Image 1 (cartoon, rainbow, N blue to C red):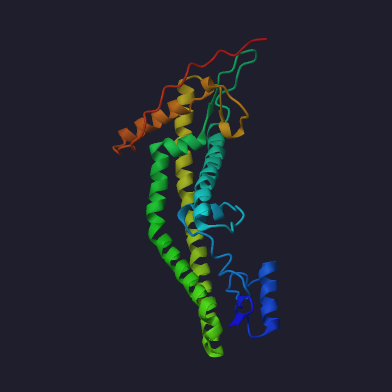
Image 2 (cartoon, helix red, strand yellow):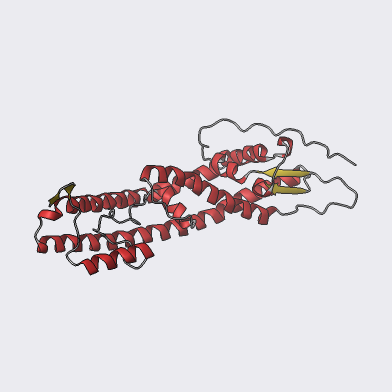
Length: 277
């Protein structure tokens, strides 16, 4: 169908039905994830990326993005790292706490540790992320293919809808609605499974990292170890993260698992002597 200014958009046969669907889509009603042919894009909610990092980001209750899939996936990578590192910080604080009561008048020996570096650079953290990606990669590819197929059907309907009979258009709309429901159900199950696996793996990783931090701190007579997540500033000399990473790599090597390739962890700087006033 063509007008004076070019092709006209495909419209529903009933104006009231079109307006009701637009209103539900705008207000976030139950049909917001279904195809809307009033000039709107296909599956506004379902057009989000279904990649590994993006799914984890949704589980972290980050507001749902509406921009391009590629940019969303890139942002999802940093978001999931922030999510996991914050979980590690909470776990390490609970596992370590104040390692020893400081006698009155004594100068405390304080250290700080970076949970995000432990996650990204320790062989244990890398192994956890790699294992999760490998486990969920087949389902991720299936969801992405399903999403692309639905998008192709929507594009075809918008292109050919003006020349379709009422019966053909009704059948195509129903296929899109059914496909959208199936996709949303599969994506929701995927998110739930990733969330459950993440919590399970994070519990084990927190225990491993917390034990290593506590062991190092006790051996070096630290009184308190803090997470960088809750510290505004700390001099580099207070950072025990490199030493903890070295210990984690040694533990991994002793267990018979080759650590991922990377630069060796540098030795931490000497602990500065606190200034007395």
